[in-house]
Length: 258
Image (cartoon, rainbow, N blue to C red; front, side, top):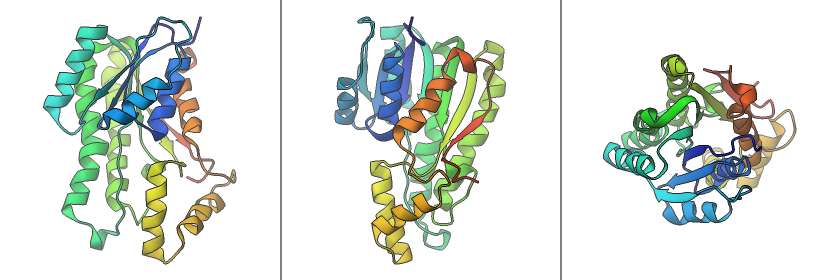
């Protein structure tokens, strides 16, 4: 029997990058995976890549705006009607922009907090009644929550908030034997990073690939993090081996957080 055979997993922000790799891991473990993303095309592409080792999984792609309560509630009601329950909730939707505090706009602040933090709150609140006893919630946090970055003050603050929210949720949901943990990825090779190295290069007068090389140079294990590295750790957090682990933040950064 597969690790999570027959379970239902709901994952936000899985139209690419880290979320896509996690969705693929859940599918390999035997889950029916609901891929929710603002970009429906990306979500559908992810679903097209998902395995179905038992032949019984029911994967789906849906749009969701995690910043809008009405949309979140509507989509989780759809999950209830079509699946009846959730075993795994993966709050992965996230965004970034890059400016130092003195140049930061209010719009950027709100954008980062609305997606990165408010989104975790809204989706978790709406999904909570569907999550079975013994279920798992995993939030995508960031190395920025343990190693602040002066070029990302707003993003850093939003991820510190996710870390705190994870711990508070762990206490609240413990009575239902639902574990709540988060992962803190380091410098992950994703399209988001492709944008960030351009921004950081402009701020620091560096070529984008030199910025990327600096990430590698500052990672003790000597390479970038890949989405599959994060997916492997999330796979552990939803496994039977992690049933007594809650309120934790697992660094997936190759030592870059040290």
